Length: 255
Image 1 (cartoon, rainbow, N blue to C red):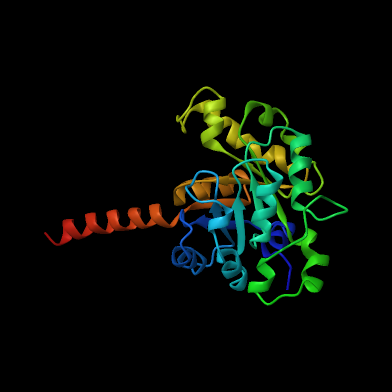
Image 2 (cartoon, helix red, strand yellow):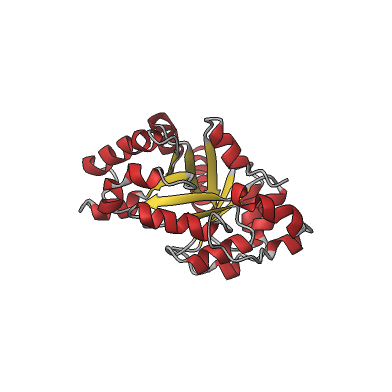
């Protein structure tokens, strides 16, 4: 019941695919879940909502075999705890720069003795699950995703990935472009070279490399480069792209 489907697939060497709704609205999240993605990315870092606003969306994802992942706003044990108590099976921590910060993130996501997470997983009440069933399995269930987005983080990739309890190292292209002094230049050779080398460096530790992309072609390229945890867009932008392309075709054929 508490086996994390994404961790299971990664352990088998498979690739997992995720997407985001960009909003906390339950209906929008259900639409993303219904596509069959492996994980639902709920972003509380670059959004107007917090872990308090996601409601029962993580429970909804769990009920459909989709791993709910909440990205917190920073390396804050309180935010990590609240996200997991809301039902997240994975927590993404941005701006992880070294092994010690990685260990702090893992400790915040795990119950003792592996960590320091406080005990009150309220999501279980909504899912009609007993603590007796959940708590002994919680540490194994949680997937810890650590974002590398700075020059310091780039220098410490192998050390961060080697931390016990870290499951995925996730490249943050936008912030990395800023760190590499080519802010916003997503096709700059320096950034492209780093992103190409990133999965190979992570793979040395046996962990999975992750990345977020915006198009189908970019997702295929990321997979070819060795990324195995790939967020390939969001409901709003995919919808806008679909509407735009369909409208262009309709106007061409049906003036």
